[in-house]
Length: 316
Image (cartoon, helix red, strand yellow):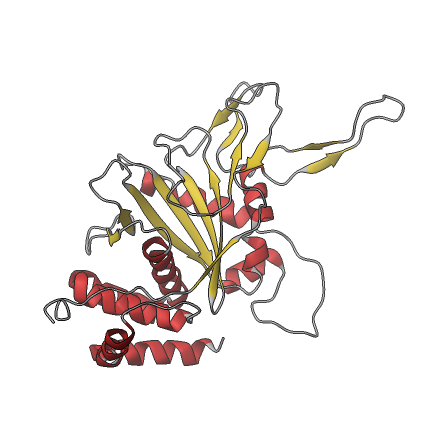
């Protein structure tokens, strides 16, 4: 992706909403939304939607595009997935001048939940993983998972999600070209339990080889003060979504808090693999996890610019 060209293209398109009439005619003719679009299309459509439905948020989003394109991509894409695939009826919630979470979904119903979106810049992911931010076929080498970075991100956002009387979801996005792996099933497993180590028994003891963890980067639980009990942490976060962004699609996995203040119903998140603990509380240090799907692969959602009927069209 040529990021400078993309930024110039988006900013040019947003200025004065010159694209509005073109897209309006195209949608009026097709009367439907499409998939397999680019991130550019998703951002443009999100800007149009805000301009027509939530004008107080439009200028804020335009400033975000200019200041932090990755954050704008993450915000627009997560909104699109929530609206188009999950039918979650998202609305902007971060009031200009006051702040707050990015979106509230199914507002006023028993299924209401809020979503905060945060983006990891490709350069920051590269520094953590040792995978360059741009693809270079000539480079080869070892890499690291970004568990520390993901853990720190959730830790920093936990307080922001604390004051809501409904389930709270944190969506972490990245456009790094290796994010489908780093923010995939392995990334979720390491974030839930911390990265495991293989423990070998003393020779001749007859004990089995096991996987162990010190829970140092376990996002939802860790050792208590006594050191003999595992307690829950960051209970303000009901669930985390890891969202890897590529040019035409998003890959999504989730992990659930075993003991949140507000429990999230995952039925609306169609086909998204969620990782969770089998049992809570944890007894005798035996940590068992499971995926709430038959095959724990990231769920792919092709980019689909949000479609909505402009007020002027409803009177035709």
